[in-house]
Image 1 (tube, rainbow, N blue to C red):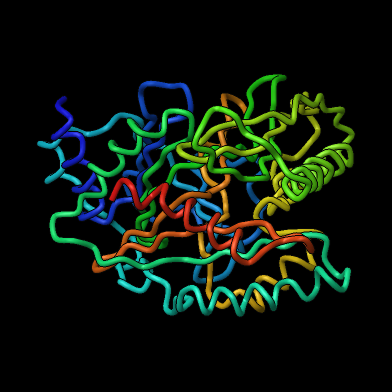
Image 2: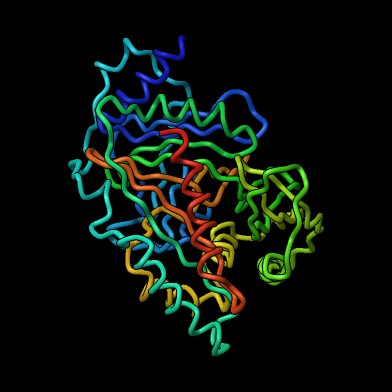
Length: 362
């Protein structure tokens, strides 16, 4: 199958409004594909309901009626041929609506960001929050001839050390992204999560880390360890160390463990998500603050996605560098973790570099 045919197939599946996901894991050569043959993806409204589920999971930052937790059933695991597309059609699904694809409102830019930054700093300076993540999105016109499929294959070639994905459902619209952050992966007795916090954009091999980034990494690692030990899990820690993803460098700590047979995987995911790397601390306070003050709906940005199958293999990644693909525009997302010592200029610069991850492949 030629590369031209592969991208045309993905574009065709989107045009026919079918539910599918294609995902290339770090270090692998061949992407993994799943597609639901008919009906709508399973809609769930709490993470604990994921226990005993199998399929490709698409979880939002905050589960709402308009952004449900979705499970795409893996009826088919091989990419169809171009000649098969005319025989496929979406059945018993919700009609496709443009507002599924695009946020209703967008932050206005640098001035809006500066105002929200100072608003987000208030609970940090007062001690109400230890950390909070401020994100933003940037909208660009979708040029004539833009191909989600071709862009996916371009990302696969460019971002070898990240999880690169493209998915579409009638409920979520179309999303494409590249993320280095594991939420939960594993099979049999070998499981892992990752603390990924702290960002640099070095121009050389040498990377130095300041107190702010080291503190941010420590907060995320400590949170994950507390959550795991509450399930009587005894994790092993490896790190922190410098990890590169595209043109960025991050501080990363690998946390490996055995998953007790009695542990409900949905309950574990509920305890882990959202991590302080995408939300803040204390968890619930930061989550509510973001919902109230960030100024737009993140939807599936900073949620998580990937295959869930406890009996075989699970690979769930936090949805970081990503874009929503709409009919007329592309919406790119990025965020950064704020501490009381944060600088507006530096945090804005960080989000610009992160938006460049997707911007460079459009």
